[in-house]
Length: 484
Image (tube, rainbow, N blue to C red; front, side, top):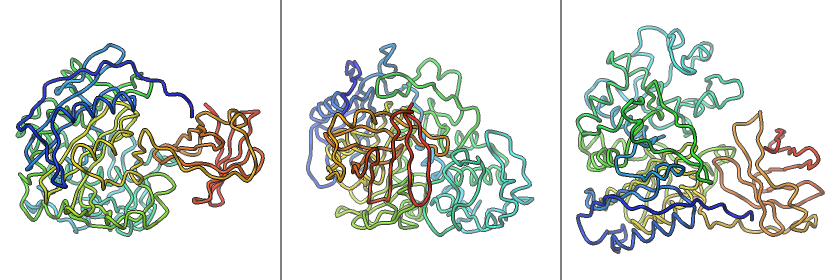
């Protein structure tokens, strides 16, 4: 394996909220706040993570809230409770909460076709903003079937975002309501319809219904100038900051900037069901559709399996769901370059946690941190692609004999103009290890000279070391990759 480049970080500790000397886990066991501090510091050093922000809830009340590490590695600026972080898809939880308020108020019905709330056909609207509008659906009348329930449960059939598609167009990947497939496009459609119904833009809606009532002064769907004074950057594995996206238009799918302090206020409200009727909270956090895909994203998202049948993985309205020996659970993630967030609540035990990280390596500590902090051994980390920092794929026996030195010429990161993913090729002794963006790593079997396979998914990789290229073959398709 290639050697890790560790970030030189002094683990700085900031204000901690402790309303008890111990933290209760879902299995009834307990740990001390000091031991959790030590665990997080160890994980950050070992997994090479710039900053971690965490809040733990017992009896649906905040018992532990703390930040570790740096908001800006290059300038050595500490991460604090008020540091402005990109919320990524944590924004979707806020939107689902707002949408359910409108449902219980009778403003919108979960199962009424959304087009019935509009004054003209959906494709006829000219929508300003980055890649907006539905003109591409004019000849596909399936858009008339779309409902709020489908948008919130990710069953619209839309891609995650149209700009990930080769032609950059919005389209149906499958019939609405028939399958789960994560889609920011679906949530943005519901946002657009709610804006038409209320006559208000989504930033105004968010401020009126959530941010101002909860005192979330450092949270907004669009970037505020005052945030410039307290920025937290997302970083790559080397501790180098990514360019900060300062959103100018509100998007339910992920434009929100927030802080640990602010998001903790919202999450405490959500898990206690405040602002929602018991019926609305139950509807939102209970399963609407079963999920059987091997992975949430990438090619494996199209392949079904029984991997998560033991927890009955599914999706509610804006949150994922599964079952455990300690009752049901609901969760929500947030991910982008430099950011990895996760939240999960066990309503029957009234135990929950929010984790926010500002580093590409952040998600690699989730499995261990979830198990240690609240006893969550159930989050489907493989489906989420939360590959642990210490995970080593099982070795495979090569058909074509190679030495570890033979593999060096293939190592590197490969990108393709045909697919919105990159594939990192590393090695483990005499096996090549492949990991595509948003997917778990796996060991490749050498089958011929310059040819390797992953038989479980019918993947073949053919390398040309002379021009630093690679062909990916799967399901009769061929994709060209070049080493960066």
